Image (cartoon, rainbow, N blue to C red; front, side, top):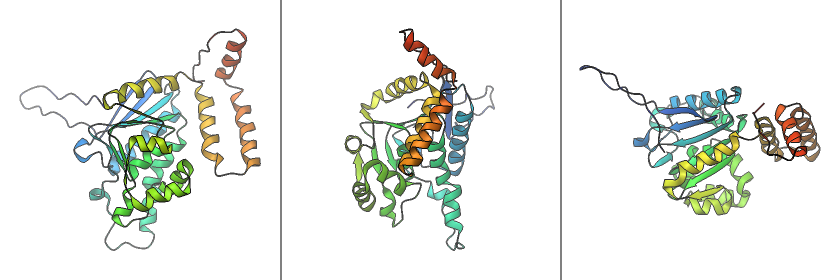
Length: 279
């Protein structure tokens, strides 16, 4: 995936500034968040994680943002956490590791799932561990043919974290989730699509254009209705029917007060395509 880094200074002594580890641009109401450590297959650092969380929070609050794309540069989407920069102490105090997870990768996954705009993952290469979970937490996933998804935790003798044991059973069912988590085998993009983890698989050189087209459709939609729909779907497997029905009714009550809902009804009666503004 392409991204635009900062331009170096001028003059004999000027040194080009290194590109940020997370690239960001706002294009046609779409917030593009691009992991940018291609030399490390975008293994996620603390600073990257915090920047992505910040950008997702900004997207939620900014009415000028109507969709989000998370992608990466190079051949890897995200090879998991950067253990060199975030490994726990060899003699941790009880509670240190659980606190690190709560304040770290779990916050990241929650930020993706709680973002009030639809989030699309454009997976350009290997997504392993937390990298796979970032993709699975997104609302839609488009993957390049070369992409791979790996539940790498079992290979390291670890319990899956970053929401893996929460996300996978909801996407593929408990038996398939256990197969992926117990064996940690590489899962090709086409197989991930077959299981329901990926919405579409496209040729490698068509990924960015496909992501742009899908994001454009999301950005042209009724943004508040999509946010409420996202919440209803995400909560649906965690609540009973009565609670789900009550939440649905409340969401529709809120949504009917939006300009987009009025436009949608008006365009139907006037027999013309709707023009949504995200408000």
